[in-house]
Length: 183
Image 1: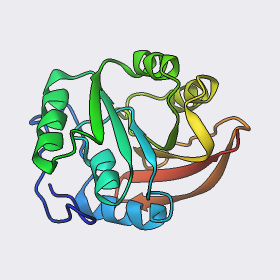
Image 2: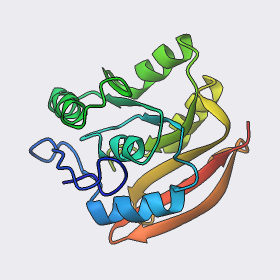
Image 3: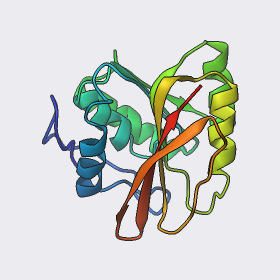
Image 4: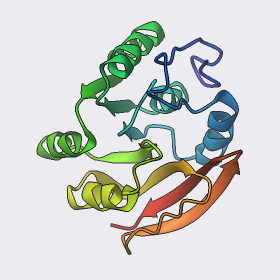
């Protein structure tokens, strides 16, 4: 894997070994960030199911100010830390080892808000709308924040009225949907 573009474009990053994660491929990330190009500069990024950290670290490479990466799996957390070190992003990116609910609680206590939120949970998780509502109720979203949901193609995401559907893209068996937070 590599960072596709931005300050660290072309740099190699690593993914945890095994089937514990589904790293978003280089081409899909490139297409995804083509859609998000105006939303990334100076953004605060949250990646609740970070895996390798590729999505959030790509955002930092493209101009995001900071990123918080969350994962429960020790292998993923170690890989994210390695990738942060390789890219020299220790001052811009941090990793939290816990589940998404605990991360939302901690971030809300710190009164953090985010402009871009990546949600790429394991495909077996069907409660993405619950996650979106939880981050909304916790006050983690800035006005007009973009929530990006990566799901198995065909899995529909219909959030509450706080989110407006901006569009989706399909890449093989992966579907990425974009939602704008309306506060």
